[in-house]
Image (cartoon, rainbow over all chains, first blue to last red; front, side, top):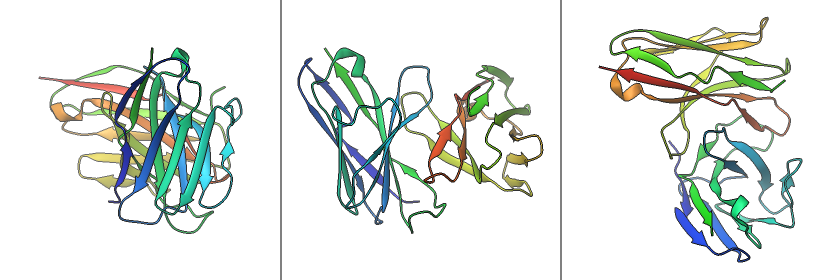
Length: 118
Length: 110
């Protein structure tokens, strides 16, 4: 299957700082990437959808100015958590989908980034 | 009501036994259905897609009931390695977003 990587896998930062997480599709071109967040013992919650070259679409309740998403190329999307606070501590997972926008191609998930804000 | 609902479990299953569980979805316009498996502190991995006619992949069988808006997963001859959380995932077609259920935890014991 397709491979998606995330970096870093784990990050600890101080409250008030910003953290950038990278998501890369290694062997296919991802027209669409999705960012999810998962709190302990809860399911994945979609934060935003990004299509290459256009602005991300954020889900209701997700602050676009706090969670900056850039999808500058077909193989890379970044999520920057700005002015992180302890409540932002979570497991952030990206997924990537290839093919034509609007198709039902499968999503392939990255290994996730565990963010801890102290 | 949640869009995708699952029994959180855990389902404690003796090794070698069969276990089955369902997932209900609220949006009748949902187009695609999947079962993902998630191990502790790991990303979800696609287990199988669920087709209208039902499908089988080794020891795993998935069924879709559109009339009652549920999908099911059955695991036969359970292995210890089947212990995981099984996520029901629905694609509603709106922007091709996936909506995840809360997961059903399965624990296979010797």
